[in-house]
Structures are given as structure tokens and as C-alpha cells.
Image 1 (cartoon, rainbow, N blue to C red):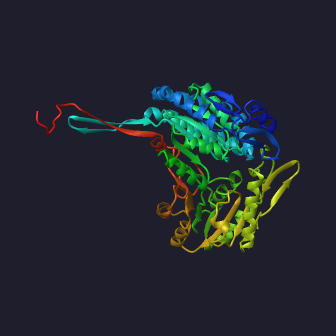
Image 2 (image 1 turned 30 degrees about the horizontal axis):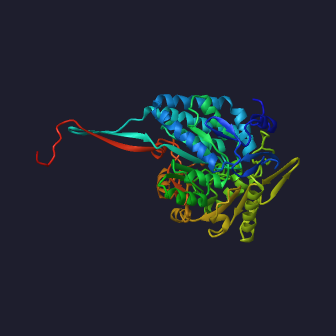
Length: 499
């Protein structure tokens, strides 16, 4: 396998960098704000985003509205075939698309090759197949013939986050398109590159122009999309504050909303756990994608009996991680998405030290020769207190806090003492405890003896301030369809009125 490079990634987006894609046509709007595009690995400007203003948003939504009747009337099997072809095309272009994801995000190329493109392709695959197997419900009520129909909503809006641009776009587009909706998608202004390529792949594979458009821009573009009267549903992956704002805007026109927001997930290590496996889980739960993952298990609760042994092994293995050039296949930890975000993460690290937590690994920025990006060493805090900012707040960086506990009841009580409820995890050899604790944890996703696995066949989403609604799995279809009940009287209609 040839090694993708920054140069190859730039070549892949040379003609699409910073553009919107509306009804299959590339465009650089002139009615919105301009944003610089920087490669996080070296901090260099590689282009600019032409943001979409109200007129461009209106054009994209209008194209989606125009494409909707034809796409909704397309037989599910034909819609599925478009998604299946697109999934295969993503796999065929895996090297190119993975390189673009690295250029967008600064994550290690090994991760983009292992997860990002495959997850997007798998999602298109799953919904492309699932839509052909959906059956309506029928209830026998004698002469009243009854059944239900799943019908598309209309024009949907997807708003993505910057940590998994291609994956998140596919997670929203696949169920929306499979069920006959059309979609206008806005990626983060920090990572605008790969979603335009996805739009063009979908159209090349048979999607009608206008059925999936991409508009670029920041918060103002997002607000214009959410406020648009022709939009029926909004799906956001983002921060809690953004989710609250979208709820407020969507309420004015009673739009459907799915929110996948932040988290401060607990990971509980019981004293009967396989320590080596638990250490692997803690690393996956904190250091993958530089810790920039919403479901990360950043509050690691460890039972006292094994806490010292677990912590020492975790520190030893963390020291083996290689921080380096994101395009280097041996790199484990890449660059922070931006200067501002790196400053935020380092601010939390400094706050953790000031609060009295014991920094046993990392805690510093790492300067790399020839790379001007912001790199933060994977950081482990021991002897943490539940009230410390590093424990209560979502940091979205490679920062892990160890909290020690005595028994199961205490662990669950403290794990649930957070406004967030996206994910949770636990490591134990006791199958009864595994099911008991999984049921008690207040989270939309719970992993046992693993962490951060997100197969597209399984619903993903949160509770409490982490949002509501589900992506992936058949559950996602509920959020992109209207359930219609049909009742047909097959005998003489009886009424109480005189004739």
C-alpha cells in the first residue's frame, strides 16, 4: 500500500477546496463569510472556505425541495443501489479519502485508514441494504383493514463536527437518503474538504442532483439552514451550547431534531478486570484521535485494590505512544485541530495541576521538527477529585483522569453524577455485574470490556445533556420518517345518523 502524503491529499482536493456543492455543481458563494483552511499538522493555510449566506442556503434548500418528489418516489431498492454503489466507490478511493481526512483533521493516517473511510462506507452499505427489507405493520381488525407506512419527511439538514468529517456526513446522509429524504449538509468550517467529495460520489453513483448538497460556512450558515421554512428536520453533531441554540431555532417551525452532543463518559475498572485489557480500553477511550472524540471515557474509575497496578501499566504503555507527523504511518497521536483548541486543552491541564491532581504522564506540548502544528502529549492525572474541572468538564483532548472507588454502588453513583449521558464503559469478568452496571449507568451507549466501538448496525446517541435521537441501526430510520396509519373499511359503513 502506497503511503498517502500531504501533497497527495492536496492534489485530491485541488479543484474542490473550500467550495460548496449545490445540485451537483461546485460553487464559491460570495454572500457569506470567508474562513481560512489550515492543515493542523503544520498550521499552514492551504486555502479558504467561501461561506454560504442566506441566498446560497436558499438555493441549496430549493434544490433539495425540487429533488425530493422524484427521490421519494424512487423505489427503495433503487435508492439502496445508489448507496451501495457509493459505498463501493468510497472503498475504491480509500487512500485518497483517508489522506483528505488527515489534511482536514490532523489525525494519524493509520486511524483514517482503519476507521474513517470504512465507517462511512459501511453506513452507506447498511442503509442501502436495510431499506429494502423494511416491512409495514398490519393489524387484523375484522372488516377494517389497517396498516402503517413509513414516509420521508422532506428536506433534512445535517450539521457536522470536525473530528470525523466524512464519517459523520455519511451517518446522517445514509439514513436520510435511504428513506427518501433529501439533505443539505454543512460540515464544520474547520474541516470542509471531504464532504464535497462525498456529495460528488453520491451523484456520480446515481443520486439526483439536489438530493444531497453541501454548503460551507460557520454558525450563521447553520442558523440560516435551521431557520429555513422548507426544512423539516435537523440533525446536529456538536456542542451542547450549539444543540440548545438549534433546539430554540427549530422550535419556531416545529422541526424534527436529532442532537448528538458532548460527553464526559465514565469508564469503570473493577478489581476483577483483566488489567492489561482494561489499560487498552482506557487508552482507546482517551487517546484515539488525540482525544477529540465526544464519547471518550475520560473519567476512569478504578477500584482501590488494583488502582496502583492499573495506573503504572497505563503510564508505561502511554509512554510508548509516538507523537508525530499525522501522515507518518507510525504515528499514534496527531495534531490538535487548531491553536484555539490546543490552548483550551492546555488550560485544562494547567487547571488540573493547580487543583492538586497528580500529573503522572504528559501534561506538556510537544514541538516537532518541521511541523508547526500543536501537539499535546497524552496526559494522565491520578488522585483526582470529582469536583475538579478536568473531571467535570468536556476537554476534548488527550486528558485522562483517574478516580479511585471502593464498591459498585459508589462507582455507579459517581459515574452518573454528571449532566452528560452519551456513553459509559466498564471492565469486569463478572457477567452478572456487567449486565447490572450496564443497566444502572445513565448513558445512551454502554461498552463492556471494550470502548468506543461504533458499528453502524447499532444505534448511537445520548441521554441528558448529551442529546437525544439515535444515529445508525434501524432506530435511525424512525428519525427520518413519518409514521402514517392507513385504515380501509371493507364492509358497509355503519353510522348513527338517520337515513
